Length: 303
Image 1 (cartoon, rainbow, N blue to C red):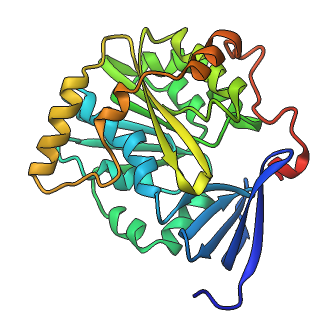
Image 2 (cartoon, rainbow, N blue to C red; image 1 turned 90 degrees about the vertical axis):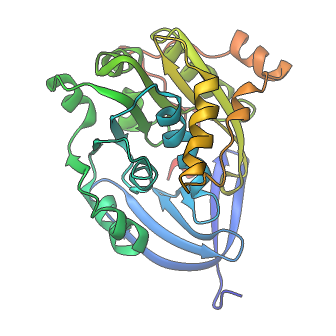
């Protein structure tokens, strides 16, 4: 039992939120955002940025296995990956499990959050010794616009579309990502909850599909989020489910077990509710008119 318990509340919508009972281990700020590590008996350590839950010790693997492992396993021969955002560095932890990768680049604007997580998570200190990893502290969009380098996989590991990050959820940004993918390349992104956030869910999908012809969707539970969550693989070419299954099994034979991942989640058909959301909600987000998930939310939701 965690002693000297304190209470923490996170608002998800204007009238719904989560209540945590535990201990605040650390609180501080970087140049860009407020950072906090909280510990509870249920989830272990939880990372909050600007008051919003990012990851928990209990299900961090699930989040990053769908976001990072899935596109690497679905790709025919991934040798390079570019992670956009990912300041907590757990996407890097997932990427280094794949020996075929020769180039692991992370583009993160906030050096403070990287330093924060490196200091407070021993596993991050360990994985950052991997010589394949390069971290560039920069505006990811500007870097992609100025660089001609191409990758087999691009992972978009960002906060939700709000504030500056909303410009990394537009059609123009996805077109830029597509240009930075080699032939057969795959983009991976987390894509919200269709029940609580139908506009966000449908807008991300419609914006993605305006650039990428082929999309696979995984629907999984994220306990620390208190809701189901979705992840999407997007490509200009068909994505092989059979390859995803075969590569997962091959990885397991080499002793790497993805303990919270299964390819069969990509076979689930959308519910009638989800199909209706995609038909009736959302739009294509553009640079001229970017979608902001929290534009109509109270300030308590976004801190």
